[in-house]
Amino acid sequence: MKKLLSLAILLSLGMGNVVPVVASDNTVLSAGAEQNIDKNKKKDKKSDKITPQKNKYEYINMAWWQQFNDDILNGYIIKAVENNKDLKMATLTIDEYYQNVVIQRAGELPQLQAGFLPGYGGIMDHEAGSFLLPIIASYELDLFGKNHNKTTAIRKLYESSILDEQAAYISIASSVGSVYINIVKLDAMIDLQEDIVKLRKEIFEIMSISNAEGIVSTSDLVKANQSYISGVTDLTDLKKERTKLLHQLAVLTGDSPNNIEEYKRIDYRELAFSGQIPEFVNSDVIMKRPDYIKAEKMLEKAGIDVRVARKEMLPSLNLGGLLLFNSTNFGSLFTTNNMLWGFGGGIIQPLFMGGKLRANLKAKKIAYERSLKNYEKTNLTSMQEVNDSLVSVNMDKEKLSKQKKIQELEQKDFELSKCKFEQGTIAKLDLNQKEENLLSVNKMVYSSEFDCMIDYISFYKAIAAQSI
Image 1 (cartoon, rainbow, N blue to C red):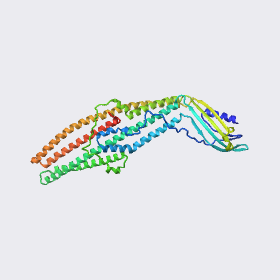
Image 2 (cartoon, helix red, strand yellow):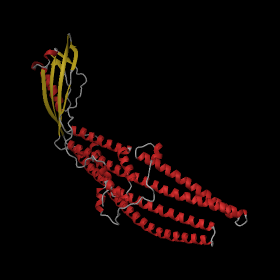
Image 3 (cartoon, rainbow, N blue to C red):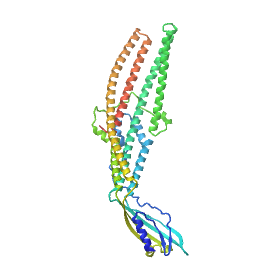
């Protein structure tokens, strides 16, 4: 009986499928459920080509943000780095992919399982209890490197998740900066709009008196009233937009939107960018963007997947071993008389799979072609974003320069009008209209100045926070 049992064990090991069987003298019992114990919990000590930054501030290049000379802005960016929920999820995703690498790498190592199976059974008129302690070892010999290739492919996904985290930090920092600057911009627009509303109200009141005296027509009075109401409406819209941006800033920094009253910002007259944005940049900056590197990693993974699909058509060699302690008496379970062992191996070659393996290979080749096209697209998109940001910076700076000349002329015109009013050659109504024109030009200039700062942030994001 034991010889037959040993032969069955060796055959099962050779096929890579071990089925433990309990035998005690003339008694044979079926095995119970196996208890799997993972013996591969060692930490991965192999260094990665791309590893997560322990200091997350290295992702966003805080020195670049110092060029705005605004500690309040820097504080919001730091708060976002520490509390933003999207960044927390990006970091957790890295941990998840790392565990997937550990899981896949375990497939390259031998597997060892053990269990304890008490039971009771009988044959004919012989009944007896039995204790079984199976120890099972199995290993797929990776002759062609298929399992190692699978681990490498999973590692590419892990490295891609690190690049996603880097891109997320740069994106969140850019969003915080853009939202904050737009809030400061709206502070300026609201202050100037309030002055415009006051002037329009004063103009309407003057025209109301003039209309009562028959100097101004009712039609002109109605137009003045419409202008005043329109100014009030515009002021309300600006305040609404500022409140929404404050809510957005709160969420970006991981705070409740109910706390926006506590959100401070710099005076819009003091915010200034002291850095220098070049007219041209080296194309090498594109190759350091996280999305570009990720596309490269995914292309490498797709190539590895093709190799794995080819190797799936090759034979696999499985090794296995079994050490079995079996006894009707627990006290004598570990004696050599009650020990049974076996060792075997087998080669399995796929012959007919219904076209599954060839279809899988074709699918992986298609995925590789798709990854290649995505890599090329990312390259083009990266160049576009960098060029677009540079064009915006240079064109908006030129636009601002011309608007400042208009502002100077409008300021001179207003000063001349003040002199004329003091001399009594023009009416107060005319002076108010000149002042409103100046305020409108000031709004235009401030708007362009802040638009330039938004362009700088777009450039920062396009070059992935690199120092140029």
